[in-house]
Length: 211
Image (cartoon, rainbow, N blue to C red; front, top):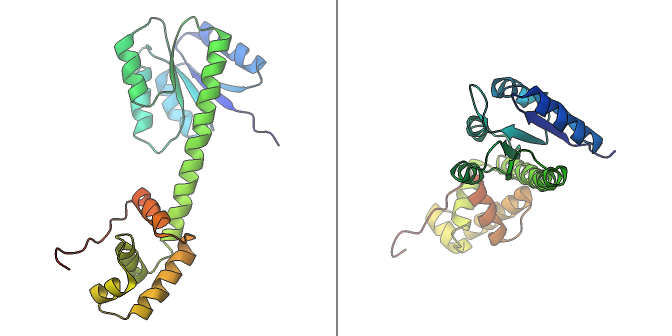
């Protein structure tokens, strides 16, 4: 079944919301509208959105405030901004904070659709990355404390005999631990383990000077 993207529209102008909703529904999107930043923030966690289009200037919290709030959560929701005037400092701040695009009203349909295509692609990439990270974290949690200790030595590039000496055990025992680590993590090479542990925040045990 083909996924139909759901777009959130946040604007305090009812006429703008109606016009944009009509255009996007006509292009095959599902649309949810929110008349204020506060309404959106109260509902976005359960709104199942694929992208949100935010007005920059609204009474109370503005679009940039919403972006700041989103960035404090684990959401991977892509953000597109709309503004009634071209404001370079504001647009730079928004893009630096992760916005996909910054468009000026009145926005052309083709321009908005192009921005949405980029945003939806970016959103899919972020979700895939998050899913991969969650899977890696789940695999990491399967390791025993001793296996995790060995892993932290492995990612320094140490040989089995060096790890064995550092941990006061046999080289054969380290080989067995490494076999279990590669099986549980689903990674055969040290390079893969180095990249995965870096993503997961696992620090290597560095050799002492002269050892």
